[in-house]
Image (cartoon, rainbow, N blue to C red):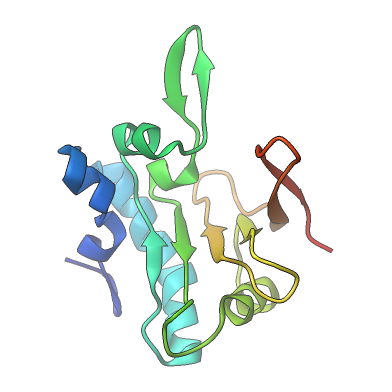
Length: 164
């Protein structure tokens, strides 16, 4: 099934971790609708602009998969609750390292300067190029246009700061 002209459902749900651990990574109907919006408003404009395949390193994640990989979550009354937008079909991670085409920094800057997004994160890397780019699109609450940089603190914990 195609989510947009150049993005398939299988690309958005592919996970070696899920496959290795026998975890279902099938989205709900609501999550499918979110992925179609994300594909057409975020992914497809990137693909059209650069004219080359765009590699998604992480797309949709079921709650069980999110837990297995240590994705964003919280505990509410002792119960694990995934808080990652990946679990709602609203986020993708793009990694163009070792691929022909634009760098991660070029993808990041294109999104920042041209697209309507909820959250855009320069994920680790260095000042010249992130290790990957996280971008989300929230169809329910609108777009915050939040731009962040992910880094590890002295204790190895992931932290975020505003992009400048």
